[in-house]
Amino acid sequence: MNGNGNNARVAVVGCGHWGKNLVRNFSELGALAGVVDPRQGVVAGFAQKYNVPAFTLDEALASDLITAIVIAVPAELHTKIALTALAAGKDVYVEKPIALNMDDAAAIADAAQGADRVLMVGHLLQYHPAFEALLACVRGGGLGTLRYAYSNRVSTGIFRTEENTLWSLAPHDFSLMLALFGEAPDKVSGTGDGWVTPGIEDEYRVDMTFPSGGRAHIFASWLHPFKEQRLVVVGDKAMAVFEDTHPDKAQKLRIYHHRIVRSSGMPVPVKAEAEILSYDMKAEPLAQECSHFLHCCNTREKPRTDAAEALAVLNAMIMAGNP
Picture 1 (tube, rainbow, N blue to C red):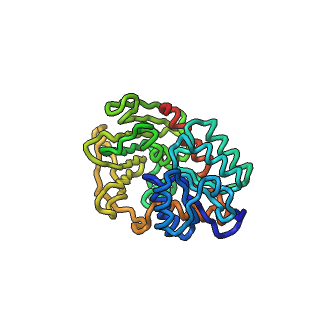
Picture 2 (cartoon, rainbow, N blue to C red):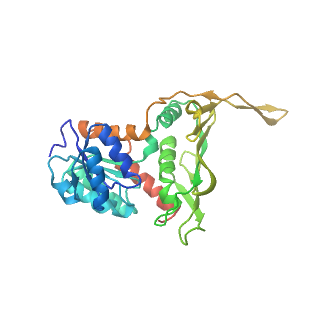
Picture 3 (spheres, rainbow, N blue to C red):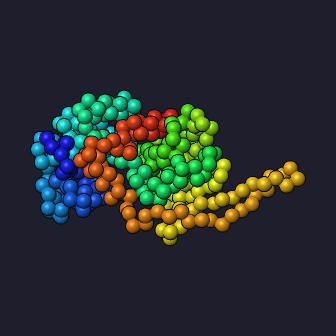
């Protein structure tokens, strides 16, 4: 095993809707050493396209050429594959959510710690350069004390039949909220409804409160007339908007220095023009995320979205509603 070296070599397990993007990015970063997928035609095509071996999972785990396993399979398979990979001495990247219950998630975290392996969870938007700039602004006191934040993640489709919108769409938003407030929520409630597939919620609404007094709200839906990915953060000094679906990259991250003054005892808003908060518009979030995983494998640093962060996100999601 070469897990402590400086040349991490990954095998991507799962070459489907999202896995294909991970395959491409790790290939572009020069770290792709194999692909795994039970669909023989699919895996053969990826192996040929990227000039890497097509492995079975057992072959990838047994190979000394593979130092890390990237897991992009349905969430119910995360635990088994992650535990097997860690037992084989591989570093592990697993797509969100880490698991579907806290016992499985804790088992993965404990196995990674016991094996002294890197464990990172794919909370992609933590690596979006606009969110990185927003988080730096918040932590630097640019918005003051946070009062509340809300996130809308809505679109028309892609409809799922194996998981609802809470588990398919909202993990990103839970991860962002916990990062912004810098703590886990003490109260979480959630509710949703389903119309397209019986028993699968097409929209979900979540409310959270934090020990420091802040509140957060999440609305996720794939039964919506248009696509919107908008995060609003309101502090006592300023307000910020991260609108990932804005057509103009330069307008994705904006700060508003609105004020409230008293006039004859009445609160009156004094509005200010939006200010653009700069960020690296050339950096792609998934490339940043994949690069961060490789960096952690090579340096043995703790990932930004590590086991502790993943467990906190999963616990909040379970509080909001079971999968």
